Image (cartoon, rainbow, N blue to C red; front, side, top):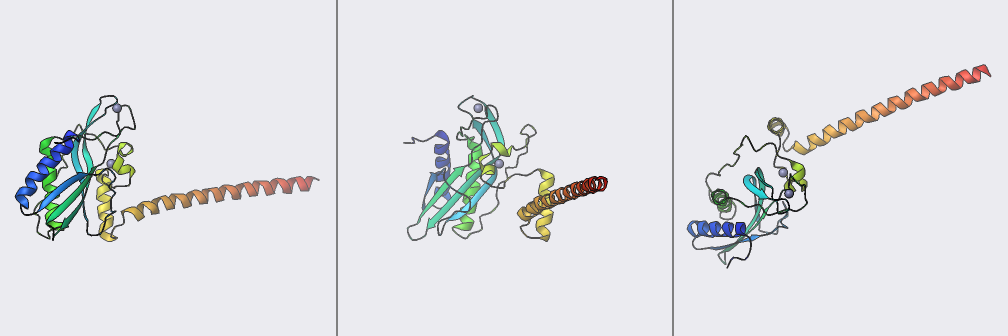
Length: 227
Ligand SMILES: [Zn+2]
Ligand SMILES: [Zn+2]
């Protein structure tokens, strides 16, 4: 019955079982959509972004496997209240192989217990956004394993598409502090930073040009004085 990958089957199985309990009167479907884009929503659709899922990746080229605690999963969801039917589209952002650097982006395979808690979070968001209910608590996945190491954005499809989901801890605190004073200042402050260095570079070039001009004028003055 399930011709797609094992992970997709697991996701569907867990989602349908849990939705059957959560909303028995409504029928929901779950579709994998690798073309889903952040903040690009059709009218009436809602969005939920899971930013710190942990998952295991597998490279079909060199057989390397790795664990990431910064897997990004994007969900778009829609409920047709009259038809009592809902639809969820999901995209698991992929990661490039760290070992061979191949551009093959394989589907991440996740352990079942992990999918369970991720589906719980999805249903919490569904309750809040599609049913306007109090969805309850979200499960936190930021299980910072000591062996996991830092996130490497150059290998991450989400980072490459501009989904801001990971920063070093100190930087995160810094940004939290700035967002308190100026709302949503994370991006402009970064631009200001680059703008400042751009201006200082300009001033350096201006100074260098001025020095060259003085040297040139001195030379031409001296040579004209000797003539
Ligand atoms: Zn590889
Ligand atoms: Zn990333």
